[in-house]
Length: 160
Image (cartoon, rainbow, N blue to C red; front, side, top):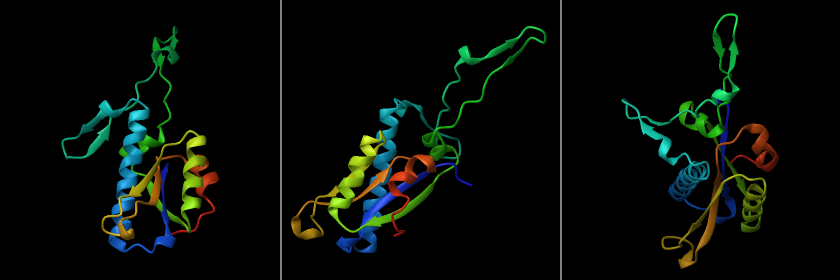
């Protein structure tokens, strides 16, 4: 079972073709993860494993939190919680696509996510292939988050 999830919010009112939806959602997901890595100063922690899998180096354990047992000589190092971003790389996360029916709803969700301190990658299509040359907000993706963090923002939105 996934520990974290990444929410993708599409605008249903635009009636985009399936290929356009896939392209916009993919763009938003990648941008959200990259923005979260940059925000956390973790971009240099990306590695490619021997089997060509992209990994994120684990967060270093703070040794000042370690407890030394003088009687046994053992050092107890507390396990750090895995961040949702680390879980995205290590275990994968659920990617859930929901929808809104207007630009206003999409922009409102984007602003609420930013106010909560979350990365929200808002995609604005240039309009070259659709939307009659008019730049148009199509979707957003949030950074990987724990359900208790993201559900207050997106938990009531219907599945796409």
